[in-house]
Length: 315
Length: 199
Image 1 (cartoon, rainbow over the protein chains, first blue to last red):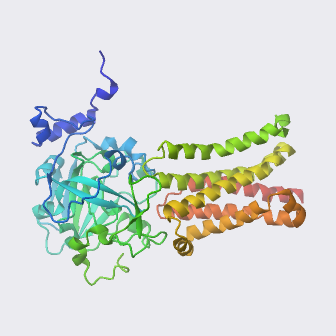
Image 2 (image 1 turned 90 degrees about the horizontal axis):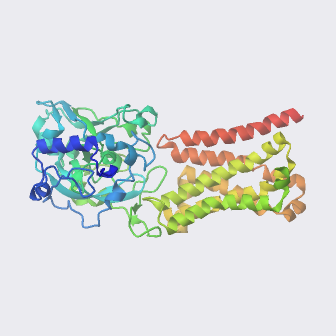
Image 3 (image 1 turned 135 degrees about the vertical axis):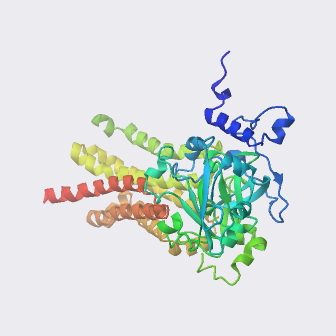
């Protein structure tokens, strides 16, 4: 009997499985079953579990978006401007050897491999709201740890005021970077205190498995109180700098995408209102839109970062 | 072919073809086949089809003249009204799914967002054309006035492309805008050339 095509493990997934095994994360569920390098029920991605996070306010009680919706409606312009396309193309990101360069104004610059990133700190599961600047939202159970763990490891110098995040732009596997939609590579930035905030997550998984390609494999940023585009995917470099970085969207349309881009129902995008959002998968076609919350509902945790700032000016 | 174009069934065929996309969308709603964000799919698809049918409507006259097939003229009104139908659905989807039919919000939203304003303008002009699309209107207005009014379809084409361009502007995603813009530009340019040649 020949195995069905769907039963054959894709080479990338196999490589990834080995990698996660080597990193000593042959993960609770897998070992309990005595299965080495277990994968998720659909057999496509290795399991990556995290302990529920103990941080206050981190785990929303709202119903998580289905995995199917969260993995088939993605903005990932390096692959396509169509939201359904990344799901078909971005699997090439899974199982590649991966290194993140962490440098700039730090005492201990390093090239850190994915295996070391996976081991750097215990994995936590955090269920965050995700609000896209386009006016839709999801609820995603991420797996990762606070970016501050990595920041501490490289010892930033006193002059480092901002972090600049650069993501992969490889024309060999990403057809979108041949278009001029943005100046590639995609760059994002955070102020040091934002980057050090415990809510700021370095995610390597979601839904108890490693990140699918379209969601930013193998390692991405998740900043839940900012519009989704701030949460850069597929990170290749984190640079500590003195001056505020110019983000890719900031360069493309400075009047529309500010450096801060905090979720704020009172500050509208120039071309649409940000007062409400459509929660993906909630209540069908005729469900009313939800009211968008200040800082996406994380005001209690993060509002102090912006005390005294005019959020209309620093949008 | 030309005998068929003169037949009643050709008219019905165009009508059925023109309503196929709508049928597909209705089926998509019923069968939950419109993707992860069905409201967005409906708003965008109805807009896309309004634009496509506008292009087809504007293609009738150049085709009629170039092929020398006067019978094509019979379909122009039908296609214009199909354009209007999809434009109405587009507006209805925006008003319903994006704005929850809160008219105060919509009135507030229109001037604030240039692309919504431009789209609304195009729709207002389109309403005037749809309202005067029957034979009685031509008779009452006089052919000359009627024709002058209906030339505003060129303005609608420009506004529609501007609406589309502006919608995509923030994402710098102009590939499709170029395709539609180029087709409409060719159709308008042909009219300019044709006019010069006739003089």
